[in-house]
Length: 508
Image 1: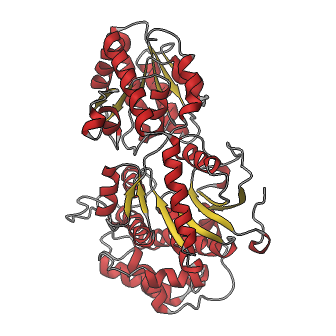
Image 2: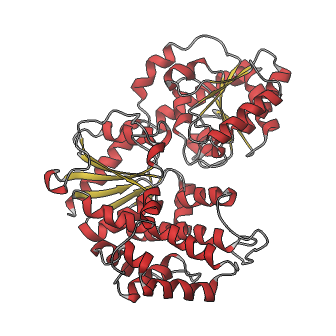
Image 3: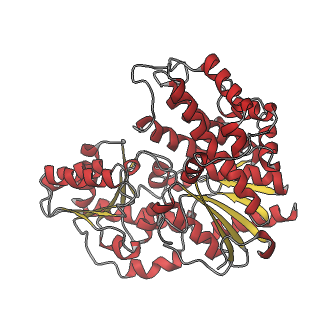
C-alpha cells in the first residue's frame, strides 16, 4: 500500500475516489458501499483522497485496503485552521480580482450566475491563490471589510472576519493537496462538500471526466447540522429575516451559504450527477444540477452472500427490535428508545438492541444511555456497539430506522435479505423501498411500515402490529425478499458503474 508518495512514483489510476469522512476509517453506510464498489470492480484501479475533520478522530482503518487501491492521500480540515496561525513570511500577492471572485462566489448574497465559479476554480487549480493571500494580503482585508459593511447584519466584525477565515482556509488546503495527488483518468466524488469541491479543482487541473454520486443530499444534511450547531459564534439577539432563511443569524447563514455554493459548483462541474432514487434526483435538480446529466442508480446488495444468512434464520418471530446505525443525532436514537418504552409496556418480553459505534458523538451517546435509565429500560435496551450485521439481523423480529435524514439505506436491503421486516421513518426513499415505487413494485406488497419522523408512539404501534400478527409479519418478510431480489441486486449496480467508468475513460 502506497501512501503520501510523490505523484511521480504512483501509477496513473483509472479512478480517483474523493471521500469525506467515510472509507476506510468509518464503518457502515456509505463506507460499506464504497468498499463494495472497489471489491466489485477488481479490474479498475483506484486512488483515494480521504478528507477528515480532526486527524485524531480517525486513529485506524476499519477496512482492509484491496490490491486495486494503488494510493491513499489524506487531508484533515482542522489542520487548515492550525496552519493559519503559523503563517509567516511574505505578504500575499494574488490579484485582487481573484480574492474578490472567491468572496463573491462563496459569500455574496447574490445567487451565482452560470459560470461564476469557473474563475475561482481556475485560480485554485493554477495555484494562484495561497494561504498567505487569504490571511495576510491587503487585498483580502479590503474584500472582507467591504463585504462586512455591505452585507453583514451581525454587529460583530470579529465574528464575521474569523468566520470567513475559518471557511476559506480549508479551500486553500484542498488546493494545495491537489498538487500532491497522482493523476487519474476519472474523478469520482461520493458527496458534494469538501470532497466534491476537490473534484472541481482536480477537474480543472487534469481536464478529465468527473462523476458525482450522492447517497444523501450533503447540503441538506449540513443545513440540519448547522441549524443545531452551538459552536457558531453569533449574536443571539440578531436574526436575519429573508424569504429564504427567516430567523437565521448572519454568521450561521454564511456557513449555510458556503455549503450551498459548493454544492452548486459541484453540480455544475460533474457529469453525470447520480442519486439513489428519484426524489433525491429532483432535489439535486432543484439545487442546480442539469436534469439531462442527473440520473438514478440504486444501491445493490450481494444476494449470494446473504443466502446462508436467511437459511440459518431461527424459526418464529423473535421479540427483538433492532436499530442498526451510528449513535448520532441524525439517526434519532432517542426516538427509538422512547418507542421501545411503548413496545415493552404492551409486550414485556420485548428487547431493544442498538447496534452501532458510539464514538462519533460521545455526548449524544451519553444522553441516550441516560434516557434508557430515566425510562426504566435497563435490561430491556442494550447498546451492543459495532457488530457483524449478518450475525445480528437474523436475530431480530423487526428492524427499526428512526433517522431524520436518509437516502436509500443499505441496511433496509440487508434486513430483507436476512428475512427481517422493517419499520422506518418517512425519509429519503424509505417509503418507496417499503411500499414499492412503480405499480409492478407495489404489487409485491408492503415489506414493513412507514411512520412519521420523531414519532415514538407511531413507531411502537407499527412494531407491535408486526410482532403480534404472525400473518402480517410473514407477508412483510415475503415482500421484502421479493423486492430486494427483483430490484436491488449488486450485479446491476456494479454493471452500471463499470459502464460509467468505461465511458468516462474513453473521453480522456
